[in-house]
Amino acid sequence: MLERSVVKTAAWLEIIAGSAFLAAPDLPCRLLFAAAPEGIATVLARFAGVGLLALGIACLPWAAARLLHRAALGLFFFNSVVAILFAWVGLATTLRGVLLWPVVALHTVIAAALLPQFLTVKIVSLAVSGQERTGKL
Image (cartoon, rainbow, N blue to C red):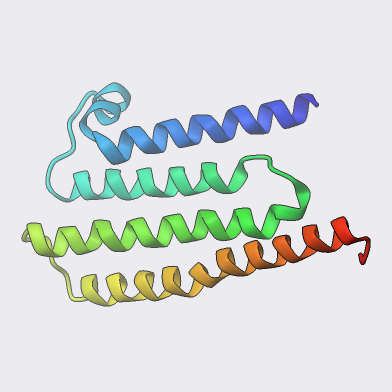
């Protein structure tokens, strides 16, 4: 029970830290490093925020049967938000390297490939719960 509480607390702390870096990177950077991020550092701070959020989501202790679903959710969140963040960087700033748009495309494709995982899990869980009720399991 203690281990589960420690993991849950750590996961939520990662989610909170990730949210702070994503929403307002100046604040955690000032609190941690006594300096505000400038230029590319703001993008990298938000990128770190997305990673921390995805890590927290993936590590939340849920039912053991949902481990694959939880990992897929963390990966889906990471890839979709990184695709949005980098697309915004490409459209709204002058920070555009040669690989920016291919990376946006890659993360979009990965997020799209993970999306059916959620539909499959719901359909399977509905079918299993229906079989349990009818005694056919």
